[in-house]
Image (tube, rainbow, N blue to C red; front, side, top):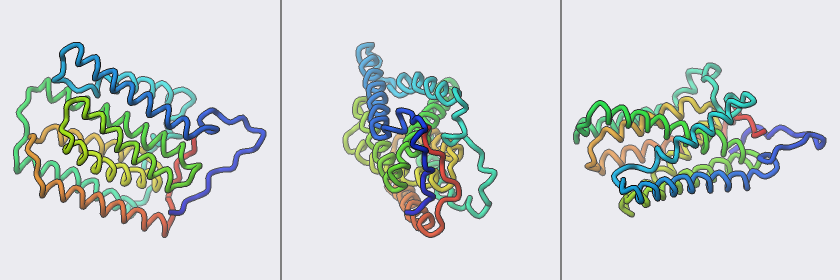
Amino acid sequence: MTMTAAPQVSTTTKLSFTRKHPVLTIVLIEIVLFLALFSAGAYLTMSEKTDQSPVPYAFAPIAVGLAVYLLSGGRWRRYGFRSMAGVSRRELVFYLPLVVDVLVVLTNGIVNGFQSMSPAKLGSLLLLALLVAFVEETIYRGLMVNLLLVKGARTAVLVSSLLFSLTHLMNLVGGQDLIATLLQLFYALLVGLTLSLLFIKHGSLLPLMAFHFLHNFSQFLVSESASVVFDSLVVAALLFSTVWLIRDIRRNGSASTPHTQR
């Protein structure tokens, strides 16, 4: 995988902690994330609210912290909050597998049924999908990929995707079945690879967040019954997307390299 080399920094320039210690920074981010999820799960258990997900309790304060950090010093654009205006229409074809993913999930709902829920429940799921999309894309693509680019594009994509996948182990704390969790880890790895490669290619988090939100919200709406056929179609679309993006980036490079961490 080839891409533009990271900009050289003068030896007289004072580097930030994150620039000097990218791997340690990644470890600290993961520790904070896991502690937040574990603490939220423990709180719900002690409060006998085991029917609730720990995710909103953990992610809400993290989202506030991320927003403050991104707003201070005008870091929004640096970490991927930029438009796709400079991307040609031909390049947008790389997002078609993500569209297919969401359409397959919705088709599964049409075939197997959607969950019946109140407007209040629907609204809470909408906010949860937005929250998860913002936090996970900002951390795993915006921050981690930028941090790890100094180690090379391959390392940035693989490590950020693996960590994104492993984070879903925390679903075991919420009582999710082991087999279901392992399948989710594999799916999350494919999602991570595809989204990281798209971020490497175009440098924008916005379409990735839109996909993440639409996918999660669509899954929330679909009834619990799993479908091997539909799940296989989603996996096939993501595998195709990953291979397609790797081949294109190796051949043509990235159209817009994300800025490195400062």
